[in-house]
Image 1 (cartoon, helix red, strand yellow):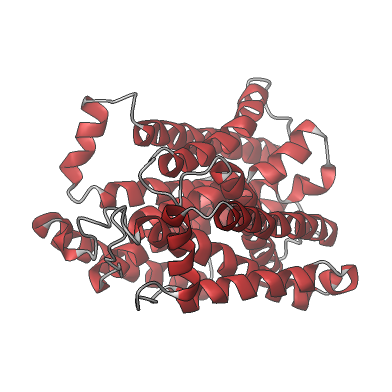
Image 2 (tube, rainbow, N blue to C red):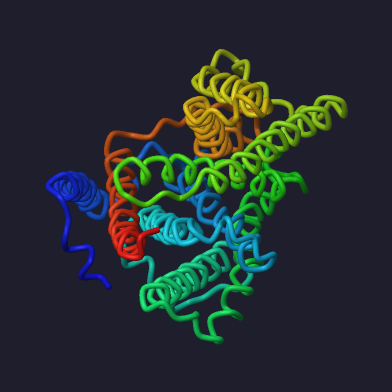
Length: 385
């Protein structure tokens, strides 16, 4: 079926060329990092995880969100999601690929990857994170490709796929839970030392992922003859609504626990993020932007009439994306490391090379999603859906 990705309009090929140029720039920056090491990044002794791991954290959530389509469709036979489940599975493949690439670039030099494989450390959460991400990638690849091929041939999927589908449901939850344990397992970091870390990660993932999928569904309907269906989009919008409310509710629970119990080692991180700490306030505008975007999105989504207006829904989904991206892709990392356990401040900002490498990883993930979507949409159009 891959041959279907080799046929397309000038706009399609132009988009692929643009992505390849960004990938090339990212690879060039990565070569510099491979030669000089992680000294080219903004990371330091006090901030040992930076932009790369932050992107991993956010993208794991996008990948895990595919379960919000797979579970209702396969477990509860919710047929409305039948038209877009493949879009969610292929989005998960692109997101997990990017996650794994961000792990590789965070290692600094590629040969260090072999240390993880040749000298596995089962007592390390990062080792298990690598395992669950790889398994989830292959599950989605096998399930998505097999079901799409059967759809093209107009035959039911083989029986052996069903156990893999059922396995992928708890596995999707596990990938983001293990990622949350990466943070919550560090007792010296008060901002991350909370039992609610995994639930916070999951609800923000189930808000951000479906929001991205709604935007992609709208884009797909605009550039192809395939219509994902208004009912499917509306059902996804309800999931986004509940989850973004829970996301901010859980944040409120964190604030109450930390400030009511008056723990300085926990309060200082939230104070740094939202009000600045000892004159250091780089993250303040970002965090307030995230909070305002989340609250505005809830206001737009909670009213059924506004949610059913697709122009407003698209704006709300963008706001949900901005809110969850800043929270997990920036604030979660900065808040954990700043201030350090001695209450000293070492702020972190990614360098130009870090951002270029990250842009290359994103471009590669988007390229994979573009090619997979091209195959899926061509088959959908052939079937007249």
